[in-house]
Amino acid sequence: MAMLMDVSAIVSLINIGVLAVLLAVYGRIYKNTRASFTLGLMFFAAMLGLHNAIAVYAYFAMAPLYADALLPYFLGVHVAELAGISALLKVTVRPF
Image (cartoon, rainbow, N blue to C red; front, side, top):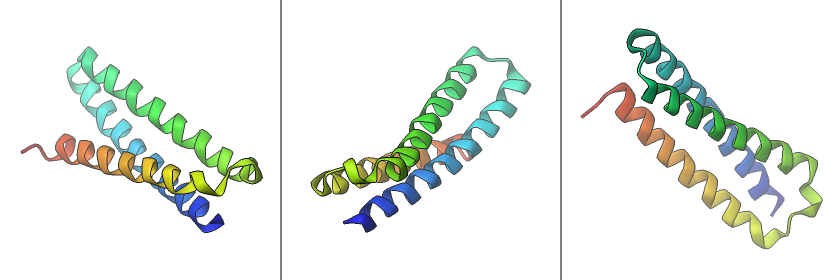
């Protein structure tokens, strides 16, 4: 089951990377438009990035405290988050 924790941490790191790209794209959009909505998107992406950074830290710092039965759910949450932010990146960079 420790492998599931490692996979969750890897998916969280990928989430951080995708969110960093989103932040960069939103920053460029904000620079060009000064739209306050874009600031909200930047805050959203930053908070999700912080959530993932804390999750990765927690996986390594508190690994013995997690019950093995929880690990598949943690992985599911991070994979679902990756799917969501990947879709957000896709429509942000290349709208329909």
